[in-house]
Every structure is written in structure tokens, then in C-alpha cells.
Amino acid sequence: MRRATLACLPLLAVLGIAGCSALQSDAVGLSGNLRFAALVSLSGLAAPYGPSQRNGINLAVEQINGSRFLGSATLQPAITDDQSSGAVATAAMAGFVADPRVLAVLGPTLSATALAADPTAQAGGLPVLGISNTANGIVEIGSFIFRDSLPESSVQPRAVQVSHARLGYTRAAIIAGDDTFSLASRQVFRDALLAAGVTIVADESFHAGDLSYAAQFGRIAALNPAAQVVVLCGTGPDTTRLLVQARGAGITAQLLGGNGFNSPAVLAAAGAAAEGLVTGAAWHAAAPTPGNAAFVAAYTARFRQAPDQFAAQAYTGVYLLAHALRESGAASRLAVRNALARLSGIPTVLGSFSFAADRNPVCDSVVQTVQGGSFVLF
Image 1 (spheres, rainbow, N blue to C red):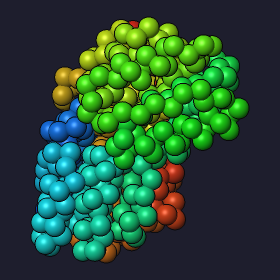
Image 2: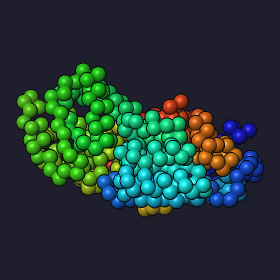
Image 3: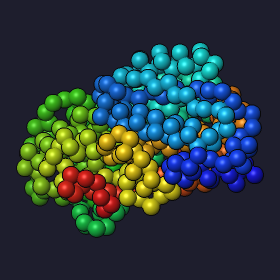
Image 4: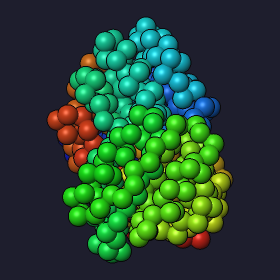
């Protein structure tokens, strides 16, 4: 009975239906406030992404509590700014471990921050669900670490495959930052390009947070024959600077970017320089996934702006946690961890969602491009 009713949750909530007695009565063993924590970057390097994550979390909590899917129990989030800092996030994670009311943690925003903080949660037996961590080494921290964010290794090879098939490029240049995410992104793109038979004619580096990449883009612009595609690997404010300075250096090649570019805030800041950019992504507003249109409408009405991938993954993370709580019927960390591991075929705005045995997400990715300042499916 419980497994059959789980599939109702995303559609039930996003449509604003207040639940039904059959669903409520099945949520046995749960009562009171079910507390979870969230670490998101509201300041620092990843500040372009944290606010939409906070919004996605709050919207999901409102809908789940309003639907009474968890019966008389309600989700109670504690959202903390991780400041894009491993030290700050680690200290906060230690506080969550020490608070027996906290059943799970969503976040942190950056992969580097997660790599610093998640071992504390693992050691304390506190489940963590990463909602934007895409670098290598995240779930390998231990059995209490999950993520609903598709890793770069799952998303960007498809972006290369689709764009290469359509555009037929044979020569590529790469420019990447030295932060954890960008280094992982660079390696994934390199492997995918080489597998497609593309020659990498330049591979440039910069220090995350640098304000100018004039020398690197100058060398790429001087290539003869020119690179037909330029891969940009960066995060936070680096993404906007990469787009603007690439076009400012006279580079007219196709631009291909990683997950760090999948934010309307990046497009707004880069303006015309973002036009034509192609990225691989875990979510798109027009995707025909369960409840997606209703999610986009509800988010836009609630926050007066359209959601992005980071909002969608955070929103999904709360729903997955609610599924796990309902499935376990117990407000304990171990029960939540074990129930998360069993989730399979859950309809979400990201698509049909399961956790693999290694606690990585199993769902489809999309390839999108920028037209008229917005993402459209490629």
C-alpha cells in the first residue's frame, strides 16, 4: 500500500491538493516537527546559486506540509548560509550532527564545500543529500552521502555528443578554473571530446576568482586554424566573466559550458555574450516531467522569478526526503538513510528518479542553449 501511494506525492503537492485520508492515515509513526537542515551559499563564490536553492526548499516544504502527506507531522527546515566556505560548512555540519532533532541535511552548494563538510556528517551518521554537487568524490565519502544532482560525468558527455553530432566540430579549446568543480568539469569534457574524435588544440587554466583571462583567450583567439568550439569550465562569478571576455577577445566559436552556467542570473549578467551558449543540464523548465509545469508556475508566482536548475534540484531534494520519511515511518537518521537508498522510480520534476547502489542519481539529463537571453532545449 505504501509503495503504491508514494508516486502520488509530487503531483499531489504541485497541484495544490490538500491530500486525502487514505494517504494521511498511511503515514504511520510520524508526528510533530520533522527537522532537517540545509546548507546553501547565500554569500561567497556560489552566491548566484544559493538563493534559488533556498526558494526551492521553502516552496517544497510549504506544499508538502499543506498536502498533509506526512499526516500530522510537518517538515521544519533550518536553512544556513554556508558562505561558500568549507570551514563554515564543516562547523555548521558539526552542529547539525550534535543536534538529535536534525534528521538529514540538504547541500552544501559547492562540491568543494561538500568534500570538506560531508565527512563530518558521515562520521556522525547524519544523512546528507547533495542538491548541486556534481564533482567526483562526493558519494564516495560514505554510505550516508547521497546526491540528486547529476554529476558532470553523467551530463556533459551527452552535451558533447549532441552538439558534436549537430555542429560537426573537429577542433576544440578548453579554459578551466582551478577549483574542485571546474577541474572535474575539464576532465569530463576532455574525455568526451576525445571520445568523439575531436582534437583539443588548447587547454588553458586560470585561478578561480581571477578577474581577467586576457592572456588565455588571446592565445585561443590566435589559433590558426581556429578552434571551432571553446569549452568554458568555471563557477560563480567566473562564469559571467568567461562569457563576456571570450566574446570580447573576438572568439566567435561555439561556446560550451558546464553546470556552473545553468542559472538565469549568469545569463542576465553576461547579456549578449551568453547567446548561443550550449550546456548540459539536469533540468529544463519545458521538460515534460511529472509536475514540472505546475512547479514552474508555482515557483514563479511565489518568488516573482522563474526557477532554475538549482531550484529544481533543491525542490526535488525535499520531496525525496519526504518520500524517505513516509517510507520509513520513523523519525530517525538511520531509517531515513535506509529509506533514501531504497527510493526507485519516483516521479519528480527532474524526471523518474532513483538512487543507484552508489547513491548517485539515476535520471535523464537535457542539452540546452541560450536564445534571446533564456535557456531553450537544444
